[in-house]
Amino acid sequence: MSSILLNPEVRPVWTVGTAAELLAAYERVWERKTILRRLYESWYELIARELRPGPVLEIGAGTGNFKRWMDRQGRTCWTLDIIRGRFVDVQADALKLPLREASVENVVLIDALHHFSRPTAFIRAAAGCLRAGGRLILLEPYVSWWGWFVYKYLHHEGVDFSFVESDSAKAAWDGNAAIPRLVLETAGVGSLPLRLVKSSHCEFLSYPLSGGFSYRSLLPESALLALHRLEQSRLFRNRLLSLRVFAVLEKSA
Image 1 (cartoon, rainbow, N blue to C red):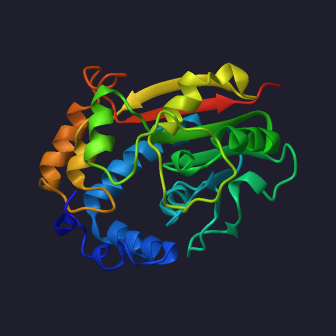
Image 2 (cartoon, one colour; image 1 turned 90 degrees about the vertical axis):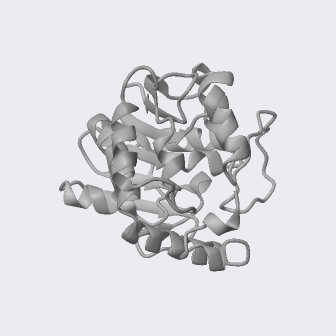
Image 3 (tube, rainbow, N blue to C red; image 1 turned 180 degrees about the vertical axis):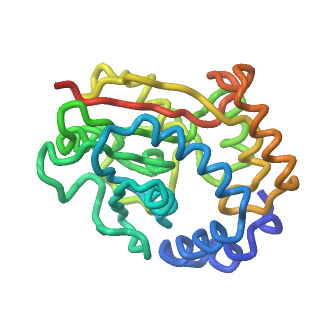
């Protein structure tokens, strides 16, 4: 997508800034861009309904948007990220979680798993720190028929279904939109130490047209919100047209 459409906060650091500088630019976009907050907060509500009682750990927390939203709901949310940030409580690698075994009730990832070079290894690590009945909740890109076109041609991250887990180093912002589908479907959750208790699909066009964190909105906020409401129908919430997958995995007793 043309750099002309980049948000003004993002353009100066898009290809030359550090990961921390890009994170700071995204934080400024979040504070300014109302439609972005409205869309994400609708997804936060989905997540909140599936949380077990007790504290929440968000991994890949970035600018801490979910943490701040949870604070307003009166829920405790701790944050972990490999990149230092104002709202990151613990700076650490997600594969080396600094947690005791069976010590947390909820682990949440929002747009994070598809950045990992070893996603199934992370899920095993997360399962180890979850208590019995604890949940790992994911909100991630989904490469449907429509999603393949969007992520392949209209998004800066790649789509690679030949992905193989590797220990090789990668940039924190490098993403592969195919990873969530590979992990949840192709590899099969039966091979993972958590049980899939819920999986649903959402979003069609409102988020791409909003521009997200990186790009300018292509429609007025009122039009995007109306489109977002329309997208809640079954016509768009399916494996052919959706751009996101919402999955709840649970640790057996």
